[in-house]
Length: 469
Image 1 (cartoon, helix red, strand yellow):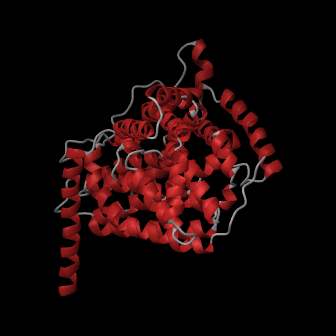
Image 2: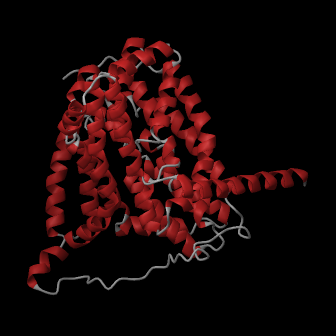
Image 3: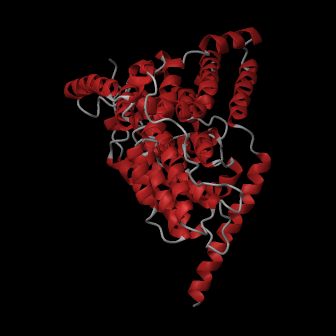
């Protein structure tokens, strides 16, 4: 009996801590764009102190501002294709069936947490939409589920394992020569996905983090009598239905509602996919362009008609606004960083405080802290990669493992930064402050575990020689 009372007291403390953290977050955390803009100012001020003139800094910023446009579009398409696949009828039917499995509020929150993380390994864009729809369907079937705890559980993939999966921005970028800035390519060459996410060390991190996250989600979720439900918050997740027409009403619309063009487009796309895989193998074929292309073909097929597909694409567009406006800022930061000489200073700094044994841990801490100011997996990697990989090369540390150190640690600040929450917030009709409390609670547990994993597993990671095409 005493053991049960002790566990209930612990769960109560976790719940109260989550609410307190949510209130603090609501008051003090600005929009993600503000973080990126502040980073531009800070890097510019540092460049001034290093001898660059205001004109030189402005030229560095403006010259490089558009350097990441191809990469920006690739990231935007990860969101679009993820949304398109998750919102298709076949996937929605699967979600409806899954929603009937949980039978208690605590189980429901843990259930959402598990699927949020496992789907994020496929695509972080897909995970956010899949989780949002799953949350709405569970809320319609099960009474007494805390909408804040379940919403935070739906975001867990982006705060834990997404960058260890197939849509890892850093891993995909390093495997795609066309996406790597020339200055960075001279340091690293290309790094295959077989050397980053397709390793047993990466699998260990995934299993540990999913297990930890599901446990925290379960024990911290309020019971029915303490929960704040979506209904209590004035949020209605019931289906509103649609007046959208299902078939063509005039000759000009016939092809929009026919699967003929979809079938032809997918057939042409499949020829390319099969040819690339046959020539390079499935792992080598998995770069950013091919990854997005495969998801796009799958989305077309699942929606079946062009009209359904286009409607889904239109619904996904609001979620990419942050990516489109912020990634050029990261490119500008990269330009100032490289031309000011700050990159060389940072390399020397990391070399002065690191050894071959400690560098993965130090790099992990640094990436996590910087993520508070640059909330972007791919854009932030562009900023960090030159000096982290150069330092790794000097210390004889595997550059491929440093990519994974970055992937595991850069997800941590997502728990408290609203940037990546935007697609999920749009689906659920909630605000970042509603999810932040339980997200920060997860962060408290994740930080020491992630840093320990990237340090201990580094001892088994083989050194990878850069490949220059």
